[in-house]
Image (cartoon, rainbow over all chains, first blue to last red; front, side, top):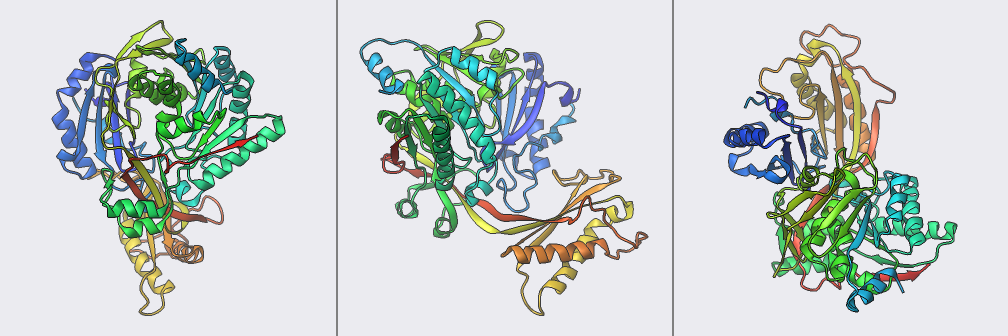
Length: 100
Length: 465
């Protein structure tokens, strides 16, 4: 199943000007756990897509919100010359099609 | 006596009760729905708070000293909350005035507040809190080893301090406490922790700082923590064991999962909130539904810090920006774009720089539809049309304009291998397609500074309107 068909929200945003955070929110714990079981693969996917080391991808399983979060360094600080997404709100697309 | 000081007196006399905080806006200046605000006032809040700023909007506003919102928008929203707060005789607290909270932003916001007071015949005690940090103070701290870069920043150097157009620090509860203690009825603060706007009064009254800061972190975004999320006012009722949340717009429901999900929003770590006074651990937080529109939250734990620090923010000028807005719908041009841009780059340099003179500008292009937002995956098919944005950064607006106009003309007529469209490579959506985008800034300071005594960093000024 594709990740985009498993979540009720999949979004990205700045967490301060130097970090980007990706949130996956699920409708039920079962789906959240299924995706949590694939965390290493998702971390690798994110690292590859953003050109960073896997060790730079922090992940959190946040049960109260049935959510999984990834936080990574931004490729460029928000608003720097050459930045492509000042708010970081369109960087989540890489995860939409990942098969779980 | 102000309502805040009356509360302090009553609580000290043993008359403790739950406190009600109204979060009226998370982005003051973009509109405050009137009806939910009115309903919020009918619930008898003890305070109205509004956050007005953020770094999420990028470095330009801090650097240029300009508000992100229009003056009209800011005035309309400030009028609503000022009239509501003064009508109910409760404190109004505004943080990160004018979007970035430096002196020009605070000044513009105070000017609007005074104008409204004059026009509406309002009379009140106004406290303003400066958040600008003198360069000397930052230099001294740097020399003493008191500056730590935030993750992703390089260590601070003297040039960053000299080059920043404005340097502010995010004030915490300590600064707001001093403002409340002056008897102020309206507090307008420069750059501030969004949590301090709402948490200070409860903490002054002896409520648990962990609960108060957690509550603050949620209500600073108004009804964003609800399903569906929105910008309508939200009411939090805080007691000694937790707090309850209710949106003042009936369609918005604060549910355990929607409120919990708010801990994720724009936060690197959903289990931690940082304040100059310490951190709040959200690891053990419980969310319980009171009914289908209200949620009760408890369990946040405050851990005071033994190393008080404030977060500095600074933005430096990098040059002036001119942009070209265009598009293309010729697949040959789209396929050859990399080679075209490379050739154009050399051509433009020859045209705008005298022989031997070094290149004094940056010029680059984004192709929307291909990789304007994210890198293109290998083997991705080319789109039928692309948006083309050219950008030049140079030391003066005139130089940036000269370069981008030259680039536009030669990109339009660039003769690439296999070209059939010999009348022009670009479609312009309007004329002129070159726009001057003004001064360009970058975040040059985003560092923590040791600050044992914060009273001298954030001076409070009181005036009677």
